[in-house]
Length: 149
Image (cartoon, rainbow, N blue to C red):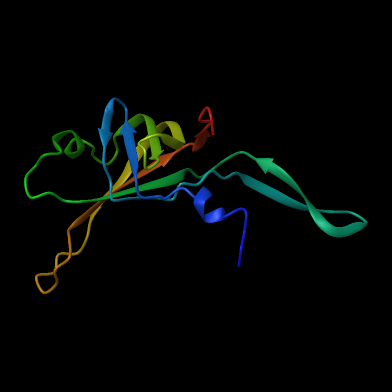
């Protein structure tokens, strides 16, 4: 089939990204839960039952960003090792890079707290990498406009 527009050429591959926490830049294997959401109340309208009215309410639960990476054999990530649960973090940015090293998308939150560090199961019978994950609770993720996109 012939098409003048191929939508696949406009898609951004999600495999090249950087994460900054404060002044430090880190590489991760996976970033998940990139979510910006609100809490709301749904109230049925009297006399008109076609749809409920939606009202934004005060946020009571934080969003959780999950960062995962493989553990290295030597401790090259001394700064990363300082990030411990309970620690407050500021100025967290996730940069999605294009193939030509240009910036495609940027996400940001101002303050958060590391709420969990976890390691994958250790299994001598498998040949899997040991993965460390870091969970950061934050008050809200914002997509930062990138000029020219």
